[in-house]
Length: 460
Ligand code: PMP
Ligand code: GLN
Image (cartoon, rainbow, N blue to C red; front, side, top):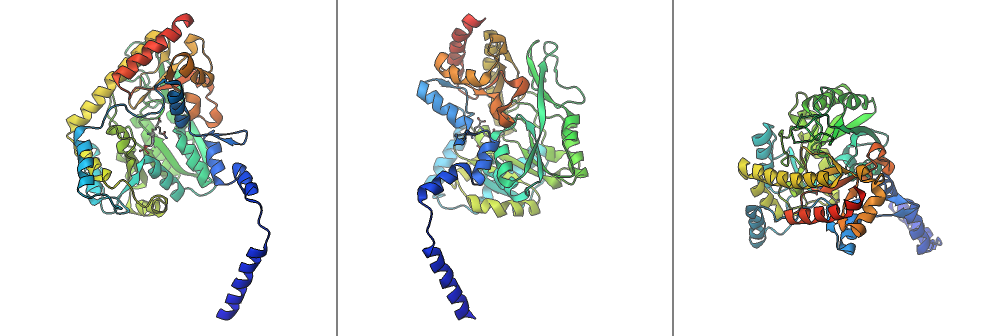
């Protein structure tokens, strides 16, 4: 028996060796247009005429460097992390936290994540089985979708959406369903518009929107309607990138109710949870019926200004953590040894320190948003996050795609066209909208405003 197997194996081997192998260049050529990666690239709108492009954030940061332009594109802060967090990372390296951390993450950090969820939201998680440390929220999202979505399963997100969602849903073979974030002019000054009973909480709510500003919102009815018997996962992102929209309680409860009705899972991307400028963040897992079916994802990057550290985490029921670890461990196994204890220090900071971070960012939001309004853009005043959406239509620029290409050269400023966050780049009513980051230093924002003002002068 064994001898027969050996003989057959040897025959297969020699057959393989004897087969004429295609020239390597043919294989490389085929790779340009086939393979699972092309699904991801196409879904993120990065495969054009058979050519693959880097992500819009990479493209725009490269453009900023090439033209010496101010970078209001990619969402990374200019400022350093809180000193205690930075010092803890340096100390951890010196103390020898430099080898593989456990696959689930350092026990100290898992404990800090569980305590943070309990302190801020009253959510109880067992740090031993219900917390998973990941390589940023990016890996948490990828591992979650790859672990749970079967080919043909539907996954719901808002549109515009963070580009990674479409890419990973496509990689998993899922079907992406979207619910539009729509825009309308704010009716009145400081009215708190966007709080209509059938809407999510719009950008503009309680945040100082002026008459004529943009209000961005999502309809609760549309959220309900997106569910079907094929829905496997609803991927919630509140506070939302790129708009800063925070979904209100009614919208969140509608999502939970529909998820229960269709036995769907909920994943929630909460990386901007602490960067809110009015109402506090409300995690969907806190709503009745939600915690057991929700995978909550967050990250240290935005809160502590350490986007390059790539420390993220998931809290979910043990069965879900086991399933997600089943993909996560083959992606990175583990990462960021010295950063893990440092993030634990950050998560343990007093509440006032978190509030200071948000207040400081809110001032920069106002600096950018007020400045853009004065220059002649129509702006939305985001309720949270890193970004302002600015409509260039009033300045005679209806196409944000071409404008974003010209701005670094004409104005010395980089911004991202909102179309990058839509399927097939089709932004519809948002085609004249740009996303601009205010997580930059005051001086960067002031200089960018001066340059944009000079650029806009002949257009007003
Ligand atoms: N989700 C959203 C909504 C984001 O804006 C980002 C980028 N900052 C991420 C996930 C990725 O987070 P991380 O850098 O922790 O991987
Ligand atoms: N999240 C960041 C943004 O929206 C970018 C992350 C990335 O470059 N992939 O700007």
